[in-house]
Length: 276
Image (cartoon, helix red, strand yellow):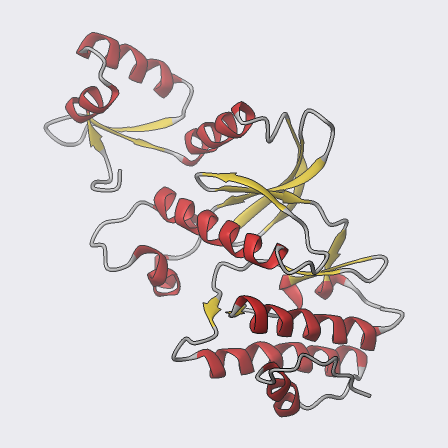
C-alpha cells in the first residue's frame, strides 16, 4: 500500500508467500469481517486495508508484546486521533492513542508534508504510522527530562501507549485556584523542553495542555514539533507563547510579556521566571 491504493491479488500472493488458492481463501475470510476493501472496477481485483483492520493488526502486536491486555472506554476524540484507556496484565492503566488523520481534509496535507515528503502516492494508514512514530520519539525525549510527564510505554503502527495522567485539557477548566502557578508551570515546561531537548511544540494552546487536580501539567500532541534550530523556530516559538499568554490573559486576567518570556528561552542559565 506504500506504492498503490489497491494491492493486486498477485502481489498479495507474492508477499504473503501463500499459494493462490490459500491467498483467495484468506482474502475472502478477512473481507467477510470487513477488515479490507475490495476493488473490482479494474481488470484485476485489488484490496486495501481499512482502518479497522489496521487497528486489529496494531492491537494484536501490542498484546503479543504484553503492553496491552484490555482495551477500555473512549477518553477523547479529536480531528486527528482517538484516545482510549487500556490496561496491561499487571492492571496498570495507560492511555492508548490511535491516529486517525484520514478523517481530516486532504486540503490539510501540507500540514503533514514533513511526514510524507514528496511522495506522489501515499496511504493515510502509512501517514498515521509515521505520525505515531514521530510522537513516540518526542515523548521519549521529553520523559528523559524528568518533568513528571507520563512515560511512553510503546507503540506499533499508528498506536502510541503512554502512562495516563488523570486530568483534562486546560480549555475545559472554568476555574483554577492558582492560575498563575499553572501558567508558570506551562512556561517552565516548554522552556526546559526547548533548552534541553531542542524541541518546539508548534501548536501549543489550551487544547494541548492537560492539567490534573493537583496541578501537574502535560503538554500533549507533539506531532508538529520542530527543532530549535529550524529556520522558522523563532516565529513558531513566539506563536506558541502568544497562544498561552493570550489565553491566560483573557480567561484568568494573568498579565505577561511575551518578549521577556522568549528571552528566557534563549538564556543559558535556566532560571524560573515569574509573572505578576
